[in-house]
Image (cartoon, rainbow, N blue to C red; front, side, top):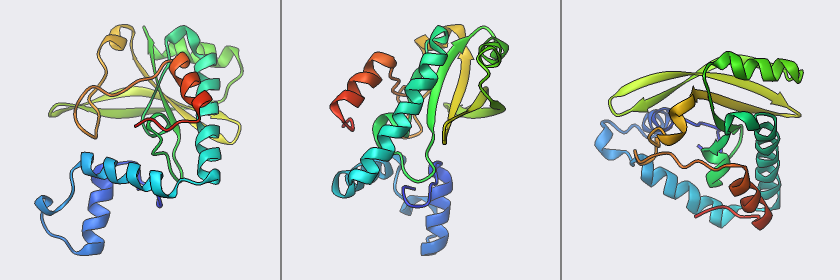
Amino acid sequence: MLEEGVHDFAMAKHKASQRLRVVGRRHLPSNREIEAAMQDHRRLFFDEEDRAALHELRERALQAMQLLEGFQPRLVGAALNGTAGLGSRAVLHVFAEAVEDVIFVLMDRRISYRESERVLREGRMARAYPALLLRLGDEEVEVVVFPSDGLRRAPPSPVDGRPMRRADMAELRRLMASGGVPA
């Protein structure tokens, strides 16, 4: 996942099982085991180039969060937990009555974007949320738009099924100031 820029656990498992000719899911690691292995890999092999790339990714996330401050932006995923690798993009959750509210702010500030959607699992169900892909410098930031009351209930993490960790601007700034990769 780190080396090839695969961001989906199921897709990564499928590719690995094909390469290794493994049949059946029971022989594959859990998402939690994969995430732990990625964090171990980062601890062992994280160099200055990786640190600079992660910092740049977080800078772009912070820039987008400042642009969208009125929508209570939260950073999630690999840019937050430090497992961002090749091709990773920052992912933000924002909260609005309608996706058009966010689009109006982007248009007003002349920020180019593409419309998309992000499908998130909620138990056995999957739900599609509107998403916007913003181009900020050389980086693309994905902004997933949740209903206004969505801040109170984070979607389940694809890693362990518990509520997804979210960081506001203050937490992201503290993380960047410490140069840290959270445990």
